[in-house]
Amino acid sequence: MAKQVKGRCRCCSKEYARAGMLKHLSVCAERGAEADKETGRSTGYFELLITAKYRKNYWLVIEMEETEKLKDLDQFIRDIWVECCGHLSSFNIDGQRYDLEAFSDSFWDLRSENMDIQLKKVLRVGLQFEYEYDFGSPTELIISVVDYRKGKQKKKPITILSRNNPPEILCSICGENNANWVSPEGFYDGTPYWCEECVSAEEAEDGDYPEFLLPVCNSPRMGVCGYGRSSDYEEES
Ligand SMILES: [Zn+2]
Ligand SMILES: [Zn+2]
Ligand SMILES: [Zn+2]
Image (cartoon, helix red, strand yellow):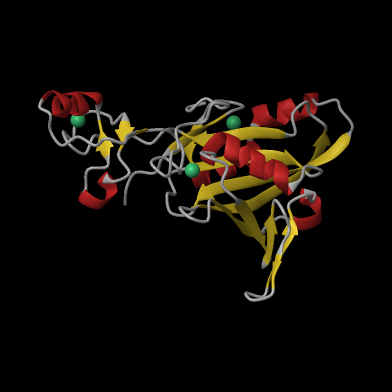
């Protein structure tokens, strides 16, 4: 099995793979000390593990205030991981679908609710639910509610507790350098990843280099549609 990608605890900087990180976060002393310093009004936080369904190297552990809404979670996921050109998205929780705009379709017997609903109305510890961004070329995520705690309100309703370190991706051409670019078409012929040198070499030879390249980035949407990278969040932090 491939080596598991680790992430860093934002509170104490220790590194663990995904499962180890969840265990660590429940006992991290630094995290406890930070929570003790909170001074706002009383509130509650859900701890969420967000994992890409088919690219499991990409994961996030966040803490989110219970009074935030599904649409806020949608916005966070867009900002950090998936937003390319304003596609639609939806959550599926306990068999109920939630969209930005509720709709019903009698032909498909589909009734969706609006994402304008507080987390505490729909989430509970132990629940696993799904998220999908862009129904055409979807990025699908699995979100697990791993914990809940009472606490005091913080300045920001969402705290990133940990995030996978950028997975090492080697150039498909030379097999040596880290890749800088991803060619969506290359997924079909086995040459998705390119380093600067190999792109330049092909260009110089007027060779068969891919015309459409997207940046390698720390996101499960890398190389899909026109995804560049997040402008709101640093990649490795
Ligand atoms: Zn820690
Ligand atoms: Zn797009
Ligand atoms: Zn190369």
